[in-house]
Image (cartoon, rainbow, N blue to C red):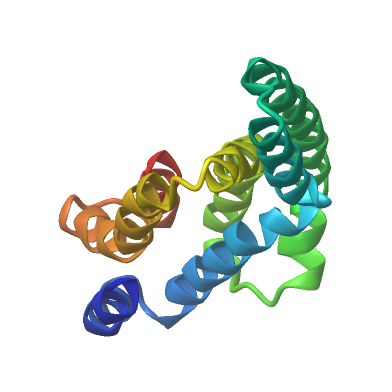
Length: 174
């Protein structure tokens, strides 16, 4: 479903944003996807230990396991926020080939992305807990609409007259 929505919406988003801004949006999508790499396996570890607790009848241990994982993920996410925020100027000015007229939009976009790191990382712990409980129905009930919104919200943002940072903010809110 998300792929079908993407196929139909992306041409309109490219036309509405222009190729340079769409390129920045595509980078934002990639960056959001790669933040999960900084999970360092804690989402999978949460799945393992929560499943073990359920298997041994230790359901009372599950909240402590989840909140420990979430706390560690939040701390790592805050560190990631600080790092990405600090290197944004370097990325925008030196590493990426961004047209001069888009530099400020790019900076704001990367600053918004940096603020999303703790949320993305902590969500992997919650996802791991749902996987351990074999609640794939709930997991998919969140993942599928969120993935679809990733492609629909840029169209909504364009119709509302939002620029790239506003569109990225809508995606992050979803």
